[in-house]
Length: 542
Image (cartoon, rainbow, N blue to C red; front, side, top):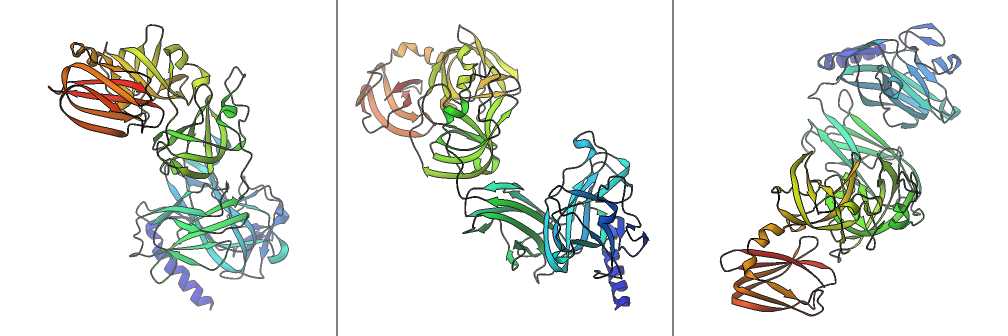
């Protein structure tokens, strides 16, 4: 049997040549019963008597190492100093059994985080059988005194704490298969009994090269060939999910490729706090009184882009907020009525909600809050952060203010217009009506138009002022009248989110009455196309 294990070890080495092994340890050599050769580097803070030569069980050979730490505070067991190189990703592969939590990391002396790379997620171990795991860590700082770390916590004597064996650390081949879990966030709380595990793979074709084997809390393995993996009817509690790439016969790759995740399910939602109460503050810094609290809130989505969205509940100051979540931004649309659970954060003085753990869409295509008409000076104030606003008759005084921004002046003050949600190319000295939520970044407020309908070039309208076009009454209840000296070809009505809600081809009409009784209350753009394709755009309130 010993000869077979030696042969197996040689085969593994041959397969890992391309991966450039930088360290391996089978724990067969010890200086004394508490000091394995090649281990206990300077960053080890696990007590000497908690590191033990272990002969009861070994994955191969005679010995493994037993690690003991019953506390929730983690302790480190590290390699001796090794050369590590910036930009290199290392695969830390090891065999483990026992009971406790274990994760890997790296000390490379980087300038942040006291020189340590972010730790990988904990792997929850609770088995008498040896299981192989691997985790990746990327070096940021070239260092001849780098140390690879095994971090442990909450070990239990039930299965003799944690034992590890046959460590192999190699440089990750950029063409090697990999798997990454993108949602939910590790160690996050999820406020739903149904959780989607979103993952991505590279250099590996699911259904052809193999599958994803996954276990939940060490249960029966199941298999997936597409993301996400949907876990349903979960009860409140802690969950450990392990994903591993396997071939079509369910065999592990060599070296193994896996990713792990820990999260907590709590189906009881946190206390409800309105957007107004989250935003309203008398603190001169503008910080929310709920900063760092996890809350439940609700509202109407008013703007969406790839990394987040704006939502609002009501009209006026303090009623809007920005939500940072690339995962959930893809699940909402303008006009959705939603409830979310997330943490209130101050991101460089922008009050936002992040770390979402729950989102429920109640209904779609709802009427948006009417934009608040402001001066440029009012745009640049805390109460309107996240709120849907409108600035009227503002002249473009700088069409390229840098970083996707342009500057307007309404005769009172200047403010910035930005391209977070939509890119518009302005014309110097043209006059605009501009609508959008207010965003704060890099020490300044800016309006974020969401579509072409949010930027009305008043100058272009004035150029066809000889149309002498009028609409009345405004606001309107049932019938909107259009009076003009020119021939109308088509009339379009666009709601505040940019949706075309009405379109009518005309037959050389010079005046027209529109029945708008069916429209929900709100602000609309009226687009009139004349005989020579000239255009008049104005707004009315229903």
